[in-house]
Image (cartoon, rainbow, N blue to C red; front, top):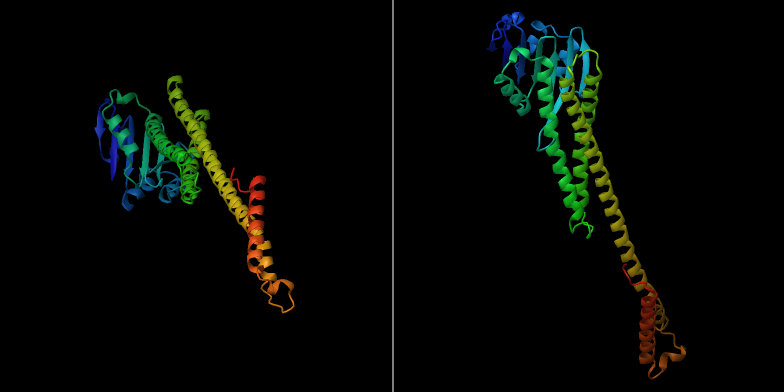
Length: 317
């Protein structure tokens, strides 16, 4: 579907005019929302955009980027779904008096901007870059709840009783959060660089007030980058703490088993000696030999256990 907002020479807002009438408009926003193959072909046949830019639109999931083609600026940005953080690409073609947006999904951020400008007064004073800013701002603002949700999950993991018990589900949850954080970082960091390029570009002429808006978006992206990096470090700390705690518990288990084995070693030795049943063994025919050997083994076991406990080998701290 193609939808159009335009302002004619009489400063009247025109909705969905024929494409042939766009050349005489003061400014225009053409939105390719889930376009059909025939509509996609208009990017080349009607708008005459650069073939490489059109190719980037068709083969989606490019990294966020900014490129210049003749009198058109081409930008790629992404929104993310809350459920699985799948990226949805939005492509922008910006000219002096037009903006064309292109996306294969029906996106809330674009729809919000569409409704915002549709009901905005003084539409004739708008610039295409302001439309791009509004969509961009909505996309960036939508990243914050995603990062904060992952931050809450990490805080929940770190404060749960599972980590004290070295529950293996801790690792699964932590790696899932790290995977999501990596997805976010792969979008946020290139987008931050893209906005910085817009701010520093000679191609765009800003009034100071308009520059402040893009600077605000850039500041938000820097904050998001820092939040993501901090949470990745926290996830790494949780992983390391889990591994350390698990190793500590295993060491205690091995220590306890080793102590038990050491206690039974002399008892096993005595039982083995008196289990050989040689005829000439001196104690073999002793009347109370069985009870004497049992008493020796009992005293030896109790004595070794007491000594190990005094040495602190049974302590888990």
